Amino acid sequence: QVQLVESGGGSVQAGGSLRLSCVASGGAFSTNYMGWFRQAPGKEREGVASIHTSSDYTVYADSVKGRFAISRDNAENTLYLQMNTLKPEDTAAYYCAAKPLFPGLRSGASPLSPHEYTYWGQGTQVTVSS
Image 1 (tube, helix red, strand yellow):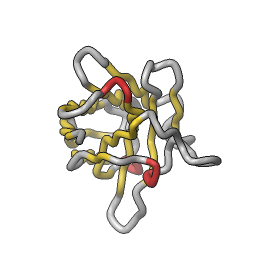
Image 2 (cartoon, rainbow, N blue to C red):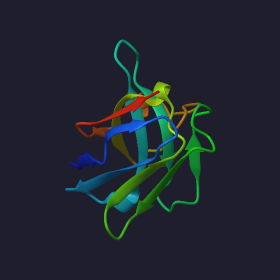
Image 3 (cartoon, rainbow, N blue to C red):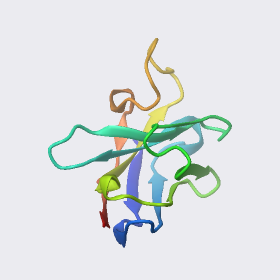
Image 4 (tube, rainbow, N blue to C red):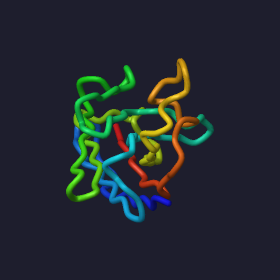
């Protein structure tokens, strides 16, 4: 059982930056796909970015490409999301999630699909004002 705790959220003006962190415990962090997701009020949870176990494969939602960067430190059991050039539409609760490497993604599934992930944090709020 993996426990995930996010931090780093807050309120910023458009164009600003935030760095989210997610500390994992209770499981083998290095053998989990990790992802960041967000959910705005009245909207479905959507994938923002995902990273493979060895950091050699990352996937981003089109809406954040070039602005957000996902990374992980397996020695520290920590996942990061560097968010730059923030926009008001980035306002949401942000969640980190983990998926054990085995079994792999279901056939045809996207690594940004929330349905692929097993463990979830409680979320951290990001608010971007114009």
